[in-house]
Picture 1 (cartoon, rainbow, N blue to C red):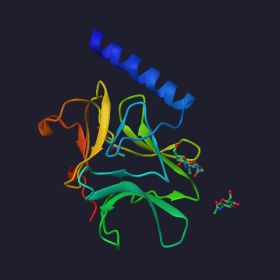
Picture 2: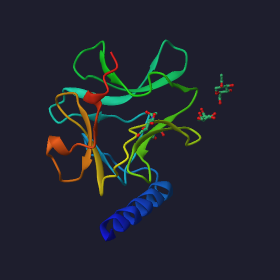
Picture 3: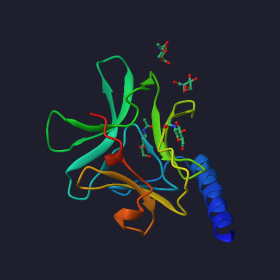
Picture 4: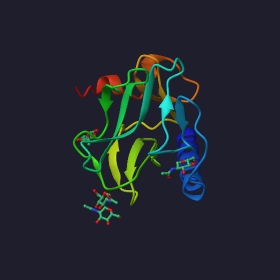
Length: 157
Ligand SMILES: *[C@@H]1O[C@H](CO)[C@@H](O)[C@H](O)[C@H]1NC(C)=O
Ligand SMILES: *[C@@H]1O[C@H](CO)[C@@H](O)[C@H](O)[C@H]1NC(C)=O
Ligand SMILES: *[C@@H]1O[C@H](CO)[C@@H](O)[C@H](O)[C@H]1NC(C)=O
Ligand SMILES: *[C@@H]1O[C@H](CO)[C@@H](O)[C@H](O)[C@H]1NC(C)=O
């Protein structure tokens, strides 16, 4: 119980800090609770195989968050978060919500997509792996059985 309170407090503080200091530098392949990514930034997996970022399709101003092969010029997408709800004429942010969910926000900070997990991480981190899998986990817990959410469970193709 006490732990849970602590983590809620931690997340609340983190969220407040994100609001106060919206920009912090991103480690190459991951985002932690105190960080966010905007639509001109990307994450790159440690072996440089995959990249996570925003892309627009069809010249319509629609913006999507997705993962593509970094070294293939066509940038073939392997996963798209908000396939059914593109950002329209809006900038985008990827960050953590107060409840530990990875969320995609539009310009007016409305949630456009969420990892939608019910069990919050104590200290959430999302990492793009060299397999192309985007995983949400507790910081320091690399056991794949403990992933709280992973893009491989949500294929889009
Ligand atoms: C995204 O964040 C980077 C690093 O903080 C900043 O230099 C850049 O201007 C931001 N881009 C947008 C579109 O907000
Ligand atoms: C897109 O944004 C621009 C600049 O804010 C605005 O002038 C335009 O009306 C917007 N278009 C749509 C379809 O929302
Ligand atoms: C953000 O999303 C909300 C909810 O879907 C919508 O009402 C709002 O117009 C959007 N804002 C922008 C800038 O796209
Ligand atoms: C989020 O999860 C709840 C159940 O945990 C489900 O009912 C709901 O449809 C989900 N929402 C989305 C957008 O996937």
